[in-house]
Length: 281
Image (cartoon, rainbow, N blue to C red):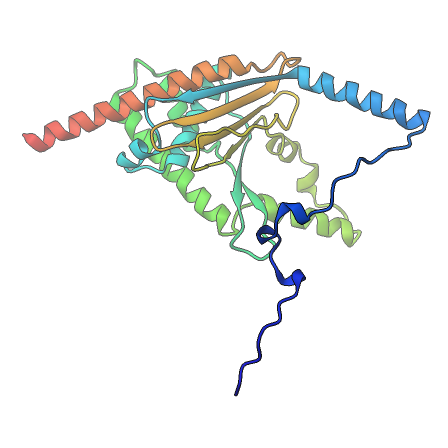
């Protein structure tokens, strides 16, 4: 069988391979807006400016170590960082809160995200030991609680990315009840359900090969938005809250995050030194 020659048309050529000189010259679009539309645009611009002025955003780079050092401690860098965020919030406000960490569901067709609920009982126990029991709790016990919390965080992360998280399933049940005009199950009217979905701490890891930071605002009026980018030797954080909120302060959160990461590093180094001493005896 003889192969026919390929007569490639101009449309077969990838756009990236064509010269930009072939592109049509851009032309300005003139918008005809009524007075009503002009007023709406001015109002929207003013509203946007007020929102921007209300955003309290702090960019912070932790340089004492990065993800490679955490790996050397035999721990997941993301789980470790999530615990640092739990510790920072607890030290800032002396309580745990409903926490959101996005979990990618890209392994599934049309998969988007589910939620990793990082405020585990193990994370709270660790935060209390590092705060309330800073002097009374032994370092060995603190280290045990750290590893237990990292293990718990790693497990729920694996479940969430495998499609076995709780949030999407509950969302599906709620929306199915609406579509079928069924009586809404009692769980969706329960106060604890609403509290659990009021994400005061909304977090997301956005890793990149280059040193850069991404950011977003809080998802609730009294909350924080925390985006972080783990690099080999450092981690970039962007912490946001609303200036009008009397319950939050980005500067305070960043200070506690920095102190907490240093305390966790010191704890791990003490434990490593003790382990090496026992091996050398």
